[in-house]
Image 1 (cartoon, rainbow, N blue to C red):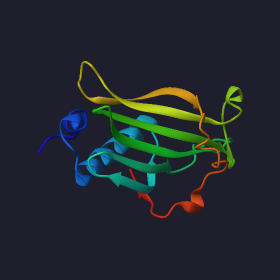
Image 2 (cartoon, rainbow, N blue to C red; image 1 turned 120 degrees about the horizontal axis):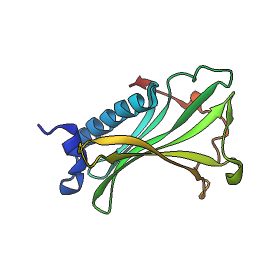
Image 3 (cartoon, one colour; image 1 turned 135 degrees about the horizontal axis):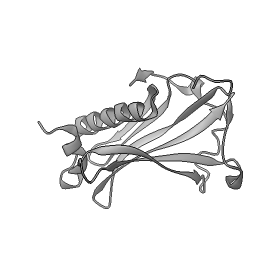
Image 4 (cartoon, rainbow, N blue to C red; image 1 turned 30 degrees about the horizontal axis):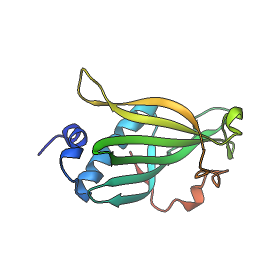
Length: 155
C-alpha cells in the first residue's frame, strides 16, 4: 500500500477511488488541525470518485479570548489540469458575526494551500492570502451555520 503523501502527489497518474480520496482528505485535515493548533470538525462531505473530495469543516471550539473567534469553511482535494490541488477556504467569525477586510467590503475568505516541500517531498499547509469573495459564493454566510451541521466528526 502506498503511503498517503505518495497517493497525493501522484494523483494525476491515476484516478483516485472514493476510498483513496477519503484517506487523503482525512490525512490532510489531520495535518490542517496540527497546522492550526486547533481541532477541526467535519459536518458534511462530497466525494466525486476519480476527481475530487470536498469536506465542509469548522473549528472544534472557539479560540479562547474575549473576541470569541471561530471559523468554518471547505477543504478540497482535487485534480486541476492533471495535478493535485489541495486548499482550504475559511470564513472567520467573532461573536457570531463574519469578519473580513475593509478593502473587500467585509467579504473576505482566508485561503490556505497544501503544497509539496521541495526538500522533504511532503506536503505542508501554508497561509496563502486573504481573498475577496469575487463571485459572492460565501455571501450568504454572515453568521456561523452551526445549526446546519449534521454529523460532527473530529480530527
